[in-house]
Each structure stands twice: as structure tokens, then as C-alpha cells.
Image (cartoon, rainbow, N blue to C red; front, side):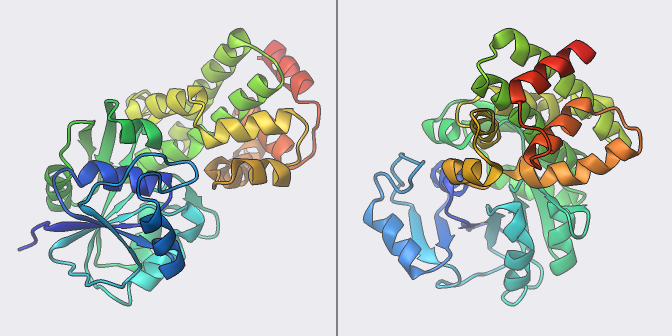
Amino acid sequence: MRTIEDIVVLGSGNWGLALATLFARRTPVRVWTIDQAMANEINAQRDKPGVFFSYPLPDRVTVDPKYATKLDENRTLIILAVPSSQVESVARELSGHVTAPLIVTVSKGFDLKRQCTMSALIASELPEASVVVLTGPTIANEVAEGQPTRAVLASQDLTALALVKEALKNDVISFEVSRDPKHHEVLAALKGLVAIAVGMADGAGLGANTQGVIMTEGLRELVTVGSFFGVPEHVAYGVSGCGDLITTCTSKDSRNRRLGSYLAQGLTLEQALAEVRMTVEGVAMSQTIETLWSLDVSIPLIHMVHAILRGRRCDVRQELTELIHAL
């Protein structure tokens, strides 16, 4: 019988460190980094362990290079906190060490090559794993500060869902549960595109009125695209859809919003990504969703964002103004 005695967080970015800080209040947590040099760097500055993460790591959090310590799949909960572009390789590497682990994925992205969500991608590399999705309005720094929020835990495996909900119980994130992880993952991947548009408006000097209209249209397109993928409307209006969308659009810590702002200020996509200095999941997702435009799915905002990301349009303020008048 499986029992959770410790947690391994694979990934030492903002979100991985925030979750480690939170869950270490009840359970010992090991953060696994890409190599010894990264582990040494974090351990040397535990009071402020990251460029964008300035919260001290608790004593119950240890930091080691990946697989430097024992991994017991019957007693360890694994949290995959890496960018979506790395999930496939990390899951494949993990399959050489465990057979049927309990995994929580917190990566909000979509695999373009296989056209699937992160939980499906993990399952393809680890078919016997029990995979649970954690998603919702969860800005890392706010979680680390202890500001309350709500998120979704989703899995088709009821036993895994119950086990994870109990193991991750805390006083910052309250969880609701779902049996349809794909629905919530699709919404999580989409919201970044709307946040890029809001960031563009901000960077172009357009205020709250414009940004409010963009978020309203963005929500409509979120519901529309979600429906195309079979996501019920009530799910799109829940915390993993509307809640995460609003958070990502309004938070100054949002990578997608910051990227949009830099683009509106005249930076190229490559320059803007370099300024953000973190993975921006919305960029990759735009290519997948752009296909829907050719299928006559009504997504003018997302279509515009994609065109700007690909360098086909350059006057962001004019594009936004024309879009709003055309809605």
C-alpha cells in the first residue's frame, strides 16, 4: 500500500521552490536540480535562492542534483515542476529509475509534437504511473508569501487523487478535485495567450479600459476554444479557466504579460524572451491554436497575438485598437 513520506520536486525554478517551501510545512521535501553546480548555488544562498525567488528555504527542504538520493516510488510523491518543453525528456529519464510512481505535474503547457497535454505526455513515457494535474491561479511568489488561493487537482485515478489531496493539504492553497485532467490542462495552456495581449496593451500605453476589453474577449475565446476541445463551459468559468486567466492577465509577475509588454515596446520575440529570462508557455501554444483559425473557429485576439509573435505585424497599438473596434 502506498504512503507518502516525502516529496521530490523535480525542478528548481520559481514554482518548484514555492511548492517546496509550502509543502515542507508538513512533509520533508527534496528539490532536485539539473546538476551539482545548481544545487551548490541554491544551497549557498538559501535565504534568497533564485534570481526571481527571494523567500528563504525552510530547513525541511534539501537541495540535491537529480537522482543523488534514493527514490522510493511507494513512499515518494514526485512533483514535476519543469517547463513543458522539458517534460518529455524528464519523464523519459525518470522511467529509468521508477516504474509506477505517483506524479503531480504543474507544467502549464501543451506538447506540439505529439499534440497532447502534459499528463498524457508523462503517461506515454511512464504508462504505469499515476498522474495528477495541479493547476489554477497560482503565482509562485504569492504562494511563497502565504497568500490564499484555490487550485484544481485532476486525475482519472481516484485513489491517486485522494492520496495527493491529503498529502498536499496546506493553509495556502485549497484544492477542488476533478476526474478530467485534460479539460483543465487545455485551459491552463490557453490563458497565457490572452495575458500576452494584455501585456501588449500595457506596454503600448493603453490603460484599464482597453485591458478590460481584451480580457473580456480573451475569456470568450477561452470558452470557444475550450468547447472545441470538449471542455464544458462551467469548467472554463472555474478557477482553472477564468480564475487562472484573470490572475495571469493582471499579475506583474506573469511571464506572459511581461513578454507582451516588451513586444509592444519594440523588442523582437527573441529579445523579449531574453528580458523575461524564464520560459513563456504562451509562445509555443500560439502555433497550436492558430490552426483553429483556419478551421473558422472565432479567435481574432489569439490570431492577432500569434501574428505579432511571428513578426508578421509590428504596430501593436494599432493592431489592438483595430481589433477592439472590430469586435
